[in-house]
Image (cartoon, rainbow, N blue to C red):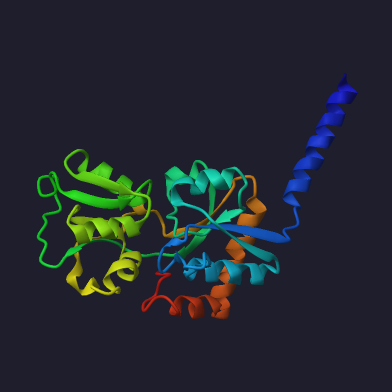
Length: 258
């Protein structure tokens, strides 16, 4: 009996060692494809954007083959856990709540969060001031949680699968304002045709309690070796200036932050 226990322990140890020593030849990245300038989907179905360029640069740095997998936001973490891909690079905020399920690299971007509305819209950002006001957010995001935690039942939260649908409702007057990260709102609405009729309103939101410590790459907890490799690759790209070259294609400011 003891021999069997010993043998099982040896097999278990070898298996654990094997996992730690995994040789990554291909890294599959889950990307949303509906959150410009981080990612968007071309009419051809091809994904483009900052996250896509970063994924390819990271793979080149790690000397592995890169595979991009399109994934709707609602199922992006479950699909990672189901091994549909190996990592998520999709402007995902590093939060304590998400850390319960997945691991993160250090940040690769940090952007303030803002409200956007038609020019001339006057809102007071208190529970009384937002009572009954329809505010659009992308479903299951930090923005969704922020509104719920800070305004509760006072505000009328309208949840969307993507910001494109929220923009349509904002233009049609079905919602009053949208909360999202400033860069995505700028790229997806303000810089588009007719975007000069809209503007940022209210405060800039960066509180780590809701918005985390920036955007990180998410990895399954058991793949800690991949997390370390990606973390090192991010630092290397910054040291070589490659990160800055990629960021300059999409942002007119320092997207990494302090």
